[in-house]
Image 1 (cartoon, rainbow, N blue to C red):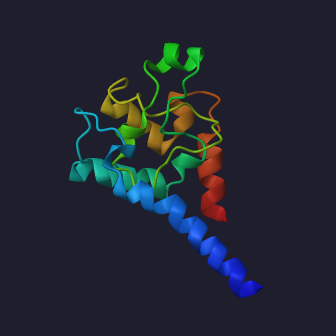
Image 2 (cartoon, rainbow, N blue to C red):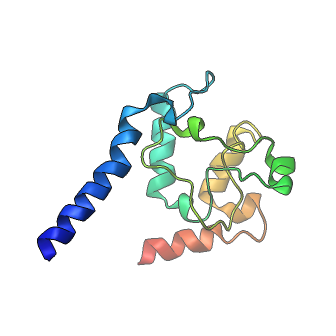
Length: 134
């Protein structure tokens, strides 16, 4: 019975995953999406290392209020170079996908040192300190 169950699960897995790898049109390509530069990769590594993804998603959801605040919603083809994906399912902070260029570099520098300086009432520093003590 165990062997039969394993075979059925294996066949089901193959049926589900093989088409994903064989069909190139599963992920639409977007001409403006380019591979990350080394500096962008370094920033992404810091984003993951510091745990920013636990509160900030990198995806704008297709809700009217989100589109009004961040512009167009995120599309699957925009994340083709992201491994692992950092979409997230819970969000305390704002979506970061369309935030690039909104603030000057010095804003981000001070935000990373102490988020409450740039965003009063932010719980980001508290979350950061809690992670460092655990």
